[in-house]
Image (tube, protein in one colour):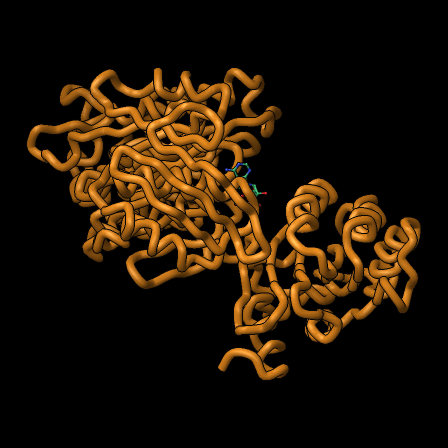
Length: 509
Ligand code: ADP
């Protein structure tokens, strides 16, 4: 694609650089520049990208977009100065990749909690209608049947990666892309999702978090509400399937109004709730060891729902998913049938089923707060034992270790302390610090608190102690793919290991 084609949305024809080279990529990291790239230089929070313009040129950059007037006239290739180059990155990337968001229906999910689960369930519910769906989340990426782990540390990738992935989705024949939209990615400062051409915006809930980045609660809410404003971004008569815009919000959240208000006037508005009055409602919610049951009433009919997900909050996530899918024309029964098959999102209260008479859940909870929340949900689900297997990372927050032991000790019948990324620390010492917390609340080492460094053996021990009706919690690793011993990550797959251990006991097959 030629430079002018990429710049035309950002720049008056009179200000176009006179030379119009072929562009091979849009890049913001000079180390990633390959010949023909358009290098985008902006002042970062730590480094100034302008300092890397010479390196980008050495590596063959064919053009530069920058923001610092000090570089005017100093760039020997076609160059354009814009007021804010970071904010320009997303529209430039969208243009370079041929605006892939305009070729599919794009669903964005924002909120403090439940984004990952809701995006995943939404893709499942949309697929129940026969659509090929793409997914961009914190844990996984997915295009149709192909699923892979999101290795980047950010939940929403940078704009060029977002647009490249959307392009891959469009080319694979996806009619939907479901995107987890964090407030960072949405904020005016990053603008990472601009140009994605959202059609459906979903709001889960908002609580106080990330305030260091967003400044105030108010600003944080506004950043999240931007997703709803972005429904106005692309609405072209030439693409009739992109004209229907839908705002979906959780009416149980006291702030849901501002999200509805942020959507364009012409957008359809749908609410879901467990408590409040809403278009889509769940009633008679019952939480059991096997999952959740409730009655759902919608503008498209009513039905009984039965999910294999653990945690009452998953009722909201499922309601959001089915609101989107039903609004898009998927029959309610089909949506529910598909949602009922979901054993959980990978590594988040993920149910491992091989026909064993006890429940096994894999969850990434690794902080005292998450432990407390999880045990409060799980403890009432069984009259039997709750058995927890977990550890604590080496060379990280030491203060949390006894707290983890204490909380697990209070809620669980049996605590099994094991390895979890010991790194260069002494494994036995980490485990002893955790066990001391459990001991402080009455657990006896060697009896109701076992110290088993080998995680595979710890899991097998938990299963050996489990009786019918018990719940075994495997905590801390979630979907992570390794355990770090010393400085070496050793491959690890908690769910697979649990399945292997169950198979050794004769379950599954
Ligand atoms: P996110 O991607 O927004 O972090 P997840 O779906 O991964 O959300 O859920 C993270 C945690 O937040 C869950 O383990 C659960 O404790 C909690 N949670 C999930 N969904 C909701 C919800 N709808 N409301 C409140 N809490 C939730």
